[in-house]
Image 1 (cartoon, rainbow, N blue to C red):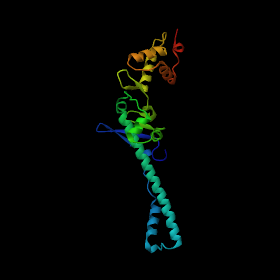
Image 2 (image 1 turned 120 degrees about the vertical axis):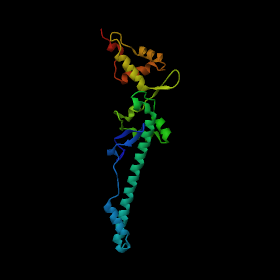
Image 3 (image 1 turned 90 degrees about the vertical axis):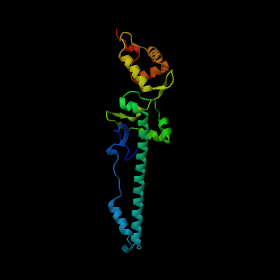
Length: 218
């Protein structure tokens, strides 16, 4: 995006409720040039002789520039409102995680697009390269979007939570008998997480964790 909505948003708490605000550096106050406004007002004065060709040309030029500036400011304001609307929906979905650092819910771009009635492409542009500053830490918006892994009893668990379990189990494993992908899959299945071995292998690779035989210590 352009001027006015790049960078980050701030998350503040008001009466126990999260409120999204643009970071001050990303919400500059725009206004029409006082010099242009003063010149326009002067040209509107009948005593100036606005019928002259020179004044008519000047007035047309000033009006063109003022209209362009007004359109630009309106565009920035619209994009700012789209950003805040999107951010508010994201925060509403992830309130628990943003409050506790745990319990990240499955959430994809489509979820937010449907909730606020916008195209997925718009949501994608809004979150791209953006961050959210919370009272506790700063995080990238893309990290709040995860796929859902079905649970045996119904519902879903975010892929980020699943990756966290895999990483923890590997960090705590006996290095002489490291956990293979099938063993990890079995443990997840035992917890009611319906996931395939190939998906576990994909997540392990994404986390740049070697296969079991390479982690084994004699």
